[in-house]
Length: 183
Image (cartoon, rainbow, N blue to C red; front, top):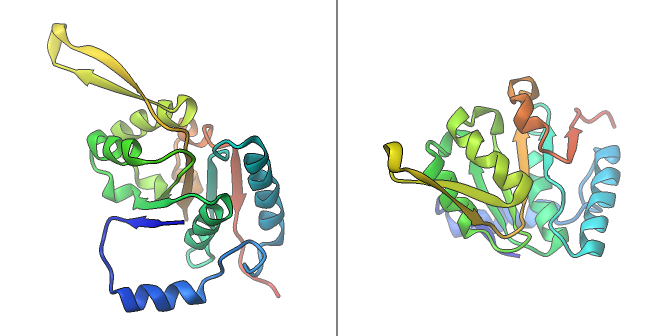
């Protein structure tokens, strides 16, 4: 599995942090129900040899949403691409990310509730049909072109589930709330 990130980090810090993080659902501590449900979802995707359903993770900060996204990709044996809602400013930014994904890759969008409306509109057909609708030209001569994307899985994370628009929320096949640890 290759981790793809937009920003370069200190390789030593990445290595240390990577060695401390859980690498599988079995190593992930807590969130028993979420892990069980994710396990079924991932097993089904592997059995079908298809991209997993899109997953929305929500809950307070620091509970492991990013770690779970990494585990999802690792368990599926695919790459993960990290980005965040505020980093995707224009539809073209999202189009560049989507067209760079390989078959069954995971696209992790942190703070997904902060995507702007124009970017969300591009994401809808990408999540539903693995397609990207692009406008060529302007005015009366403008035409729409549909590009086919390789199947992929969006893992969205948010601390504010109520701020995600209904159309976006409806496109996730699985939604999981992460709770504070009690044990």
